[in-house]
Picture 1 (cartoon, helix red, strand yellow):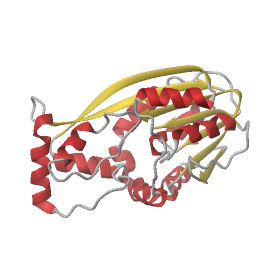
Picture 2 (spheres, one colour):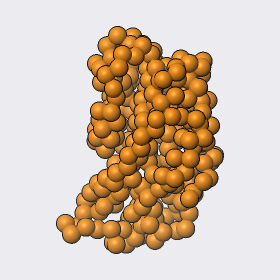
Picture 3 (cartoon, helix red, strand yellow):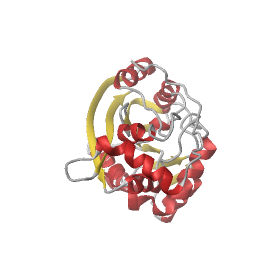
Picture 4 (cartoon, helix red, strand yellow):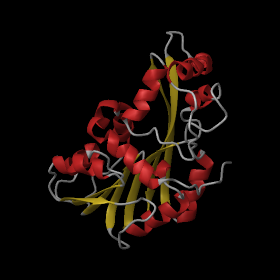
Amino acid sequence: MNCKTAININKKAVASSFSKAATHYDQFAQLQRDIGSLLLSGLSNKDVQTILDLGCGTGYFSEKISELYPHCKMTCLDLSDGMLAQVEKKQLANVTCLQGDIDNLPFADNHFDLIFSNLVLQWSEDLAACLKQLKGSLTDGGKLHFSTLLNGTLNELTQAWKAVDLHPHTNSFLDLDSIKLQIQQAGFKKVSIKTETRVLHYENVIEVMRALKGIGANHVHGHQAVKLSGRSLIKLLEKGYLPFVNESGQLNLTYQVCYVEAEK
């Protein structure tokens, strides 16, 4: 079990990466939309008054949540001011945009009836502490619905980079047992967890890298600078990726996804 949950993350760099991607994020975010749509389908029809979209991004799901709960008050929180600017353009009714950090939530206890978070909690420095804050922010009986990524995500790219050097060039993710443990320790009840594997396909290494950069997910914690550049780098990455080329000649890229519904 990978029990190490606390890591050092340069939040300023993460925010900058996502802000740079904000204006074109939705062009590259089909995977995020597919996963978020499945997460959204798990929301109940129960009437709620206050909702938090944690790590709202461009507000794609904020808008859909507003349609599901038209009379609720929703807070859209994101680390990136560039992303929040995209949300504000939607002019959603009863929605407040707030720049903030998932590891340092600015909310009082018993504040939200529902918290929705799609592919955000993998950016937490300390998932256990983050989950405790989220539980505290929920009203009694309130629910947290979140999706996150598991160990094994981006495995093909991780292995391909080893043909270049031995430095980390992709982020690591917690395993399922570790996430279950953090949820249990946070004190949630009536917990439901589902997992799935999604494999995307790309024509070449450049497409893989462009897709990650397009959604702002190209920031790597503790990233080491690559001395090689241009064609030399691409050739080494292509060599490293050879074991992960499918029968159609495309490059596989795997995402291990976890969906959680937890009640306070």
